[in-house]
Amino acid sequence: MSTYSGAGAGTRKGGRTSGLAIAGLVCGIVGLFILPIVLGPLAIVFGAVALRQTGSAMAKWALALGVVDILLMIVMFAVAANNGGSFSWHIG
Image (cartoon, rainbow, N blue to C red; front, top):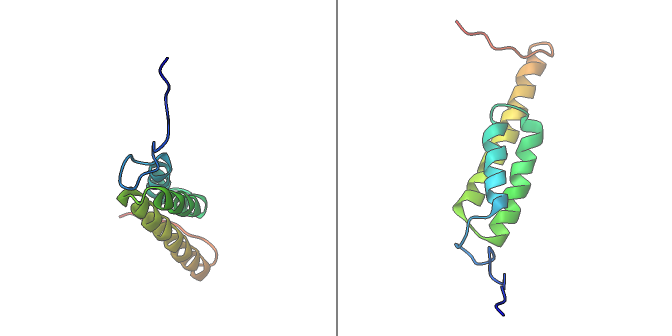
């Protein structure tokens, strides 16, 4: 009878890519375009947990993109406050 031991699966540093790192990276990228107020903090949380578990570069990128999302949100709020509470894009 064979047994499966899941010990070490996804727990070693630099081994497998963590699902949390992927989720954080996706939240960070999508947060650049829509809902940075929600997806930015999610990217930071997912990236921090994945960084602690695996130490992967993808987790570091998730953290960085989460911070960029939050900074983008703050800039958008500041621009909206200076324009009488509205924020609009004009192309052309």
